[in-house]
Amino acid sequence: MAHTFIMPGLILSGDGAVEQSMDYMPKPPKKALVVTSACNVEYGQVDEITEVLEKEGREYCIFEQVNQEPSDSPVQAGARLYMEEHCGYLIAIGGGSAIDVMKAIGLLVSNPGDITDYAGKKEILNPLPFMAAVPTTAGTGSEATQFTIITDTKRNVKMLIGMKELMPDLVLLIPKLTYTVPREVTVSTGMDALIHALEAFLSKKAQPLTDSLAISAVKRILPNLPRVYSDGTDQSARNEMACAALEAGIAFNNSSVTLIHGMSRPIGALFHVPHGLSNAMLLRECMYFMADSAEDRLAVLSEAVHAAENGMNEKEKTEALLKKLSELCDFCAVPTLEEYGVEKKAFMAQIDKMAEDALASGSPHNLRKTIEKEDIISIYQKLWQEERSS
Ligand SMILES: [Fe+2]
Image (cartoon, rainbow, N blue to C red; front, top):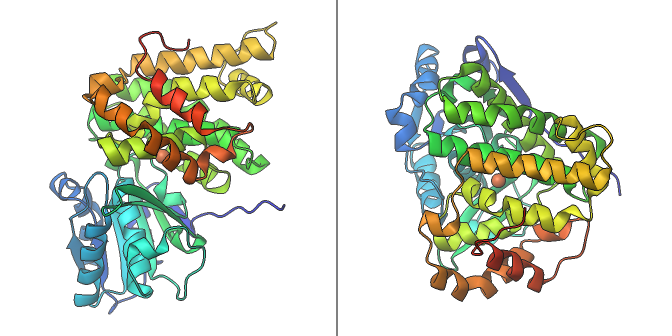
């Protein structure tokens, strides 16, 4: 089957990007709905864009009800505001949640029904309004994907909605917006970006273009995530992380995520662990599970990030890479489920449902080996063992 490769319509970065972006936004009298969170308003990141909108005489209104793990209700509220205010296009300013909510609002204001009607759908009736994404974290890559993840509160499931129409028309890459991100969010989002790149590279849907971007993202993240963890004001490391997150987003959008994301979403939906953190908690065990089916590729990656040493065979190169990833988790103090405060008994009671939800998402089937429900249950159980794979 032929590979497809989809990108945002336009990516603007560097000096003057915000001012220049106005040339590409829909012209007045169309009004913008700015989709964001109260924190992004409070930290002044929204002002970076709205000041330019005002200078240009453009009308906008702000919807700031986005929270960390977005569900169907803010999407409905945002769509209502868009219609009441007669808006004509959307600008998301925030992390992946704001961008995901923007996409879902775009879907609802141009097409009939409820957001839950679109889970698993591949076709829609009408085109979406113009969407601009301005990421303020370096991680989710949502600015460069055709996906939105919204929790269905009735079923307690994170819905993955994916269609090419959800790809933003414009991305503004402004790394300085990430300079004030707190340490725990820096780790969670940085780990998410790393895992996007790793999974895109290891997926059976990988293609040469995604391989290049995935390797580049891992090469940027491995040295720079510890730097931003140690010193959030390290601007050059922050800039590298912002670029890596975009690369990783484009890579997994055109390849896929696999086991880690498939298993991570149920943990987020049921135990409200931030997405990147639950990914990071799963990184070690999932990599050990998938390693034997991808030693050739892991050896290539190991060489690219200088984990491999001369004279090592593929297996040894793979082990060197996994050791490096494990050391990164330790350096960034990725907690266990227990340390995060999840109750073991409650977790174990949900394991069967989580394994089914993980498999139903389809992501684990993108591995280069077959995987059964029992394998997933076994990995979930290993997250509670003191002796981890190493
Ligand atoms: Fe992710």
